[in-house]
Structures are given as C-alpha cells and as structure tokens.
Length: 193
Length: 251
Image (cartoon, rainbow over all chains, first blue to last red; front, top):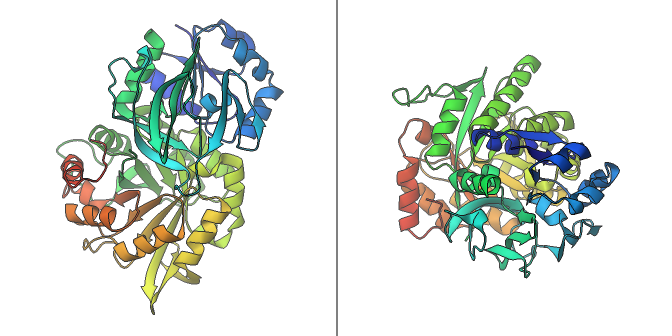
C-alpha cells in the first residue's frame, strides 16, 4: 500500500508520517504529482494559514491535481478546510470540492479552540470501532458548518462539522495523528477500508 | 464538550529528564522518550518539554530528541526553552512539535510574537509568563524568574494576545514549588482579560488543587511536574476524581 502525504510546506507532516509508521505503513512525504496520483491513498495534512497554504498549492500546481484525485483522500485540519469553497481566513478561494464556506469561531469563545473535544453523529465506516462521545484532539480557529456531507459533528459554542465526506474525499477537523488510540483507529480505518 | 487538559511538564538537559523522577521501578524515567510514552499511555492530554541546556550543539541534539518523541507518542506536545528565531521554531515544528513556548525572548522582542503568528499561525504559539505578586500587583519576571521587569502581568497578557499568541502558560512564582495550590485568583482575573486558552502552572500539590483551579476560573489546562514525576498524584486517579466533580475530562 502506497500512501502519499502531500507536502506543501505547511503543517506537521512529520507527525502524520510517524503515525502511519506506528500502524506499520510507510507514508511518502511528497509534492510530486506523479507519485501523488499513483498512490493508493492520499493524506492532505495541514496546520497553518489558509491563504498562504493555497498560494503554495497553486505554485506547485497541486490546486488542480487534488480535486481530480480518484483514490481515497483524507484531509486533516487545514487540509479539510481547504477542500471547501471558500475560507474566511484571509478571504481565500479554496479547492471547491465541498460546497461550503469555512467560518471563524465567534469572538465570545476562546479562539483558537485547543484541546480534546467529543465527536457525535458518526456516519461513516471511517469511525468503525469509535463511539459517539469519544475524544479527538483539535486545534483551530475556523470551522466548517454542518452541511449535507457532514459525517461527524463537535460542539464549541455552535455545532459544526468535525468530519465531512463526498465521494472519495474525506476531511477531519481533528488531528488523528495526535488523538491517542481513537486517532490510531481512525487512521487504520482509512488505510484498510 | 471540550475537555480540561492535564499536562505533565518535563525539563530536559543533555537529552535526559532532570528534576528527581521517581519512576525507576517502572521505566527509565531519565529517558524523555520512555517517560513521554508512559505519560501518553496513562492519560496525559498533552506534554510540555523545556530544554534547559544552553549550547548550540545541545540545541541540535534537542531537535533530534523532539523528532524521537514525535515518533513515539500519539498526543500533542509543546517544546520551549531558549527559542530566539524563526529558524529555531521551524526546526522544532518540522521535528514534530505541535507548539512552541516562548518566554523571556518575547518580552525583550515583542514583535517576535507577530512574526511567529504570521509565519506559523497562532495555534502553535504559546507565550509562557512567569510572574510574582509585589505591592498589590503582578510583575513579569525573566530568565527563569531571575530578573524582575516593570511589566505588569495583565497588560502583558493582553499584549501577547493582540500580537497573535494562541495560548498563555502562566506560572505564579509565588506558588511554584509550594504545593499549596494554583494562583486561582490571578488565573481567574487573567481569564477575564484575555480570550485565548490559559494553562495554569505552579503550586499543584494534591488533587483538590486541580479541582479548585478548574472550578474557580475559566482555565483550560493545568500543568505540573514534580507531583507527577514523584508519583504523588497519579494521572488516572486525578482524572477520575475531576470527572466525579463534573469537570469535563478525557478519561
């Protein structure tokens, strides 16, 4: 099994690579379009800022490649947000895979949200062996609202999408690579399903 | 619901954990990787590593250690100690750290916070503040609490938030090491002044202290070192007790 981890200068890619290694899989950190296109699965990670991340994706031509991928793609955190239409962060046009805006949390909340939050309304085999009300680790200031493609929610002031899925594209707002045992189960589900 | 976080803190010198650690029967507690694995498997929500070595050579070794920690644990961790440049931060984040903690250098060079936030995002910038209560006010101290400044705690906290810090790690020097409880009043006031997460540090001695700090103010996380290292408080026992007291906790 070949898993490409898209390298576009953003985020904590090392942790994703090591999380796959702990599951006995080798993740290839790459921005090479050939390698990404020919991989069995693709992980699109991301910690960082939306507009600078989109700029980097565009400079490598990855903004055109990612929406065309046919194999299972897992977007993590900013990776999930970038798969939407538009982000309020830097008023950025994104990859338009999911028909949704990405909004900023209300100012009455502590922003960023940092820590372990519970997940609900689980609607995908990605969550096999994971129950409602289990904790995942999140760190973010922007969120995807609940949309028809929502497959899990969390609450922080409002209820928002903590995971979304459309065809071969899945996005999770939390960091499975940092979410202890539950995160490992989820990554394993992504690899094996 | 977002859980309150419990964070063991490890001081690292020459790639070893320092400050008496009393786990010798269980694991090699001087080995930061082994100790991190132990904590992450036993309920820690996050870890903080403070590099207390001084030379550049040791700093490179520290980055290697960060990489090993990242390879071995599946929970988030913050690293700090002596960070002075964007390059330092880039190396540590690339090695697998989730957040970096900056203390003295940010006080001397406040613009550094803005630079960090715009380069790496607020979510990975923790500003550590050491302060002491003198003449009816809290004053910020530098260099591990050795040098007093005229900067007041609450003014500085608001400034670091405005400059893009994502989180504040507040240590009360009056409480640190006393084991008499956290600086609940100051923490409560701090949580009213800023709108970013706050980690309470200094003073943890028993389980009730964690209970107190989470009940008294809008505090997001509590950090401690020796009570965990000497196994005076078990992480599991602590978290069960907090949960019984209706504090949202990840069990």
